[in-house]
Amino acid sequence: MTSKTRKLSGLAALALTMSVSLAACGSSDNSPQAGNDSGMKSSETTGGTDQAMNQPFGPACDQVPATGDGSFQGMATAPVASAASANPLLSTLVTAVGAADLVEPLNSAPALTVLAPANPAFDAIPKKDLNGLLKNKPALTTVLTHHVIPGKLSPDQLAGDHQTLAKDTVTISGSGENFTIDAGNGNTAKILCGNIQTANATVYVIDSVLMPAKM
Image 1 (tube, rainbow, N blue to C red):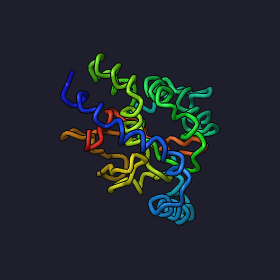
Image 2 (image 1 turned 180 degrees about the vertical axis):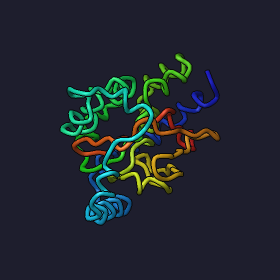
Image 3 (image 1 turned 120 degrees about the vertical axis):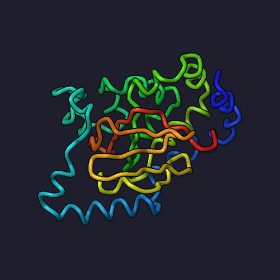
Image 4 (image 1 turned 90 degrees about the vertical axis):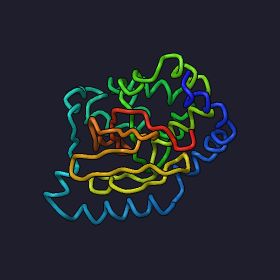
């Protein structure tokens, strides 16, 4: 087991606090969300430029089903946790969200941005470590909520430091369709398919699991 995973148990008390506060974070009118919403409203008047910004992008977008509940159109009609459950790129993440009892809090939040690790991101974690994380609900909650930002971020709003539902910060760099995300321990994540719309969230499928700084 890696030193990273051995530290997970030490986060139990912290993550319990995160779990209790999750619903409040999702529904509060905090400053990051207010800023994101106002930015979206101003961009909605830009016509063709905004229309292009609303399209999914990334090298793995062709792996999203063309039809059905897991397609772009199908996901747009369902809240984020339910939408992810229909997408074949996100089956391991869906299992983790269920294990942390986050389905209802995520589905009921008014507006979110989700940095969603694809299945290969979880496959890169040693199986023993991943199984241990899935059984440690407080630590799992901390890791998963580190991937969720209040408010819906469009691609032109991604770059910068953003507060997460874990009450910490995730840093995103880049512009256009090229972004890197601080994954912790000197590692970075890239977007595989971004700007996917669900009924209450914007989803960016990424190629790594992001580790909170305190893990």
